Structure formats: structure tokens, C-alpha cells
Image 1: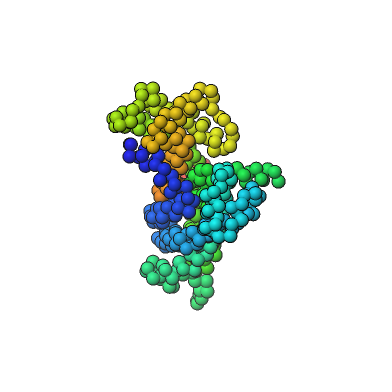
Image 2 (image 1 turned 120 degrees about the horizontal axis):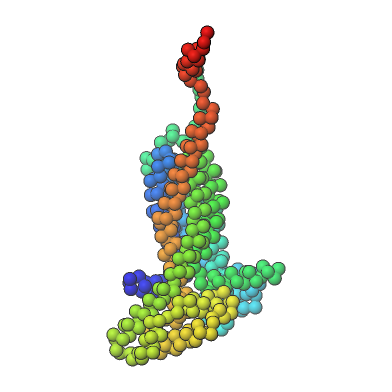
Length: 171
Length: 231
């Protein structure tokens, strides 16, 4: 019990959790395990549908984690460039910084803790919006393109199993 | 315009002060609820059955995720944070007594072992929501005395506000992870099962209403009638 309490009350745990990118990554890793496994356990669907859905989910979650490392962290680093567009932060000098180092230094010297909190909040908000666009709009489109070749390579689907729209029926 | 400004102000402050996991994950689930089924529709190489199943599953999963991230996580963190914080101060007080390196008076020990959970919550929440003071006179007295004890053992104890917010964030994240790993996909399976059963019931009912009469039975009825017939 005290181990659990120690873990939950540890400031390091909270610092890790405060970052929305890390939140989404850890959630994504767990989803990559849980969702395909439960899809395969579903008794209501046929084998082909289950295999397709599970592999789609697995590819999507893996791609999400990869795109997070590739895109979200660089985007997050540059969110300070957009801070000046928030009317709440217009009066703050730090938001007009030209490089990330200058921004960090100015943020360190900032005395108003409320503005500091709002700057952090604005960065989190932009990070959430970027994550939403990457995970919900871009990643599923890429999945559409790679799912069938991947399934064929893993022997989960045969080439002729794909949708046959032009079936000739000869009598 | 003022309303939008105020709301943005609050959102920025809330996200900066305490960015709980369910905020990011629930907003992304909302994005996914709309865009992922749309993307599944765009897969030209999959069969209609595969598309139908994936779309059904995605809609159910993301709806369950959105609702449970907001609902379940909130309920759990609101009810569990104060007891965990209370346990933290109790454990620390006992360790302080055991250690003997730091002198702890009996009054300090009493304060640390009898924390008012509601007071702790109100103290942290009032600061978080910029609502001003939510504490009653007794509660603020209690918090002040707790803060004094914390000041005495500064290197050993976390301040009540920091402790409450840190614990809340951690609980929220663990809750989100548990939901993501097992509960949400399990719920999706159960919902799909229930939907399947409901559909099967509907089908049997419609088949019953449009049942084609059995010819043999029909003739048997007629012959029975014939037997009863006096002529």
C-alpha cells in the first residue's frame, strides 16, 4: 500500500504525467497491446473482419507512436512562435522571442507566475491540437495505404481476398 | 468576445496549472470519433463487411473512451486523491517519529495524522479554478496549521497544494492507462455482443411475422375441420 502511495505522491511521477505528449504516448503503447488483443477475442465478428480490424489497430497505434516521436516533439519545441497570437499573452515579453533558447531564458526571468502558467497552458493546448490533427487526420490515411501490403506480407490476407468489384458471372 | 476571452483564459490557466491526462486523451478521442471512421470508409481495398465492422468498432470504442475518460477518471480522482494524501502525511508522520533525527511534537503528529480531506481538496481546487477561497474558517485554520508543520519539515514533506495536485495528476494518468489497456476494449466487446444479440432477436421477430404458412399443417387443419363437419 505504501509503495502505491509513494508512487502516486511522487513529484517525479507528476512531472512525467504533466506532459501531454508523454501522456498520449503511454496511452498509445497500451492501446497497441489492448485493442488488437480484445478485437481478436470478439465473438460477434468473422475471422477476416477481426484480423483486418486488429491489424489496422496495431498498425495505427504503432504509427501514432512513431509519428509522435517524429513530429510532435519538434512541433512542441516550436510552439513558442505562436504564443504571440494569444491575446492573453500579448503583454508578455517572452512570447516575442526569436529562438527557443531566448524564450527559455526569458521564461526563467519572468516573475508573474500566472502568465507563466498560462504560457505553459497555451503550449499544452497547441500540442493537443497538433496531436489531434496528426493522430486523427493524417495517421489513418497512411494506415489505409499500408494496411493491405502489410497484411499480405504477414500472410493475414491473400491478394485475391481483397474486394472484387468486377466479378464476371458467366452462365 | 469577452466570454471567449474569459473561457480561453480559464483553459490556459487550467492546462498550465494541472494538465490532467484525461484532458489530452479525451480531446484526442473526440477528434478520432469523427475522423477515424471516415478514414476507414476511404479504404478502397477492404470488403464491405470489414469496413462495417471496423467503423462500428471504432465508433463504439472512441465513444466509450471519451465518456469514460471524462466520467470514470473524474469520479475516481475526485474520490481517491484526498485519502491518498491523508495516507502520505500519516506515513510520513510515523516515519518522523521512528527516525528521531527530526523532532516532531505531539501536536504536529496529531495534525499530520488527522488531515481533513475536504479541507485539503477545497484548498487545492479553489486555487486551481481561480475561484477564490472555498474554505470555511475551520478548514482554513486546519490548512494553516498543516502548512506550518510542513514548513518545519520542509525537506521531508510536500506542501499540501503540491501534494494534492501531483497526486491528482498521477491518479488520473493511471486511471486513463487502465481504461485504455483493458476496460475500454472490454466494454466495446460487450457492447458489440449486446448489439449482435439485439439484431438476432430483431431478425427472428421479423421472420416470425412474415412466416410462410406450412402447407402440410394447413391441409391437416382442413382435414380436421372436415372430420368435425356434420356432412
